[in-house]
Image 1 (tube, rainbow, N blue to C red):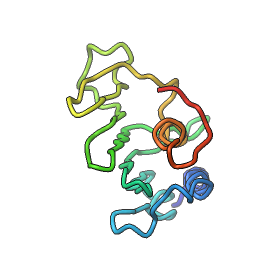
Image 2: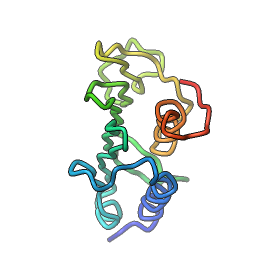
Image 3: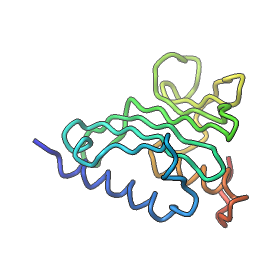
Image 4: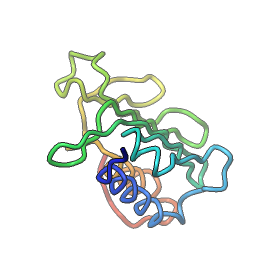
Length: 146
């Protein structure tokens, strides 16, 4: 049975992408966004969001509905136009030394691991960080710090 709360969450993401469509290359062969019914039935989301400068955000997460819809088992990898990793947020439990374990961020080509630099990791937060910090040269006016 489909979950209406997951469907609503999907459409919030879809709306955020639509509001930033001027930054996206949705005609690129690698641009992919799962379908709304997939999210409603499987409680999972996956996407490859290609930006007009050639950078991309590769996303996967699962959803659970408690008091609110929550993402878990997530990975957000942002690649620069040359395909090098800028950052990757994930919650895999393989870095117990990090103070925000299991949540952490990998940065740069060296894949260095750090504690989270965001209060909360979800699609809207990560995408907004990319738009404001990494895509400002494309006409964004926001000023988020890394």
